[in-house]
Length: 143
Image (cartoon, rainbow, N blue to C red; front, side, top):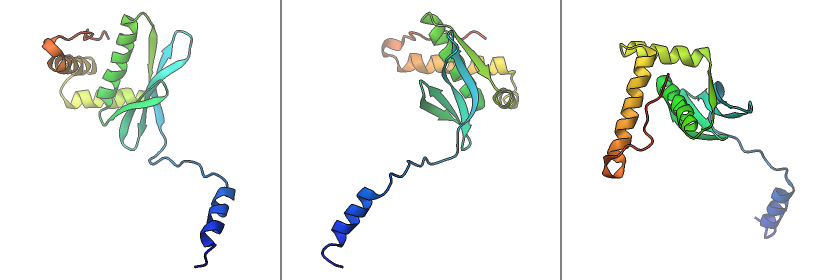
């Protein structure tokens, strides 16, 4: 190698056009939206690479393989916002609703029963992890 090959390589890199960031995984297929009073979308859920992804404020928050769990998380987000005085509407695709219903049926429950059970588990985990065993902000969800 010549002594100037590094210098030429550095110049070539600086002059090359910027390469876009390539995200790993497939595209996010939207399946639910949280819509505010003003009609703006503040969050939602989508399906990507075999997982349901929760998106709030334009950022991916968490992912799960369970469609019913995703629906429970979305309903919880609506309930939390209602307690804070903000109204949100939840719009769910037929695909997410059907997948969650199938999961609940496989567990031997209706979808509302299954979502209630998931909410009870969330409240229980919250009360176990909170100092003193209190479950602040753990009001059950309304269907």
